[in-house]
Length: 408
Image (spheres, rainbow, N blue to C red):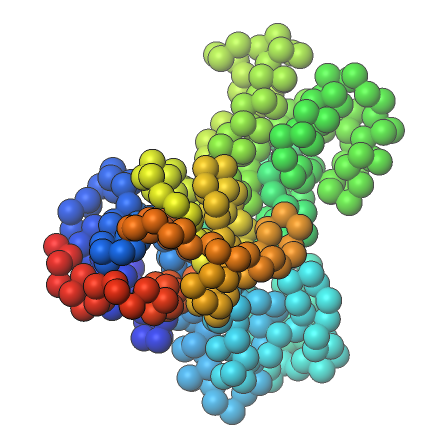
């Protein structure tokens, strides 16, 4: 796989060594057990896969290279490059400006942007409407395009089944930039609909099977269907794709449920289900799959708590938190500054989006066993800073140098 020129300050000597060892010993990525760093009084168990993915490194390389190569030009990002506060802050510090925030609120007016400016498309991609707007301003939207290749793969899959006249059902978060982009691309070619979860899939099934009146569909799914969507006919032949950072089992459950609903309603079997349901397989990206599977492997290890590091608006990170919370106390933080002292940590609730100060989060037992992972947009250096902060609270712990020497 291609390697990227990512700024050295995002790298971690400790974690790079661990990843290189694991890669050499497990080239086929079949071992999802965590790596144990034994510091005596505390043991850290690092997930087999975590941190920057292919798409994120690609986006960071393009963004920083663009800054270096164009010192006299104004450089804009449509919105956040990725969902990580440090990376976005670093880009701002290098003079990059955001056109809008992640919710679509304007920060810089479109009127102020000219053909002399550079506009970078973030890793989530963007809508066809925004691409056309940039063209009308004399800006090539694909010249500085950091859209993740795995997001583009979903677009290609949607385009493929659109040509076969299937309606696209997109499993994603309606307000997420990637979902908006994918919806824009798919709805340009075929009727499209966004559903957020299995509950909405079950509601949709009542329209597929004519249990609810068509008129009600437009109320229940307001703002989630494409122009000229006809619920009386566009739900009879469908395919399911997804926002690449959703929980794998959720997408699989939704696709299987809709498939079975259609099979029962139209009296189809495995041999002729394709008449009404497209085989899209899984459109989750490899990193999302690997990170989620690695967390499940990590959770087989008995531990006192889990720490998940990443941006609070990161979809893939929030799903790692969700998996951990089902098993043990979990602390979602964006960097080491959330760890105040040995007794206090400030964590984020991904469902309520509220911050909570927790006392006595470290147990008094020895050794303390801590599971650690991060989202696909979190720099390894941030993870090492978290480990360093925790070690600083436990002065009797072995040194990091000694533990690194024990790695093999």
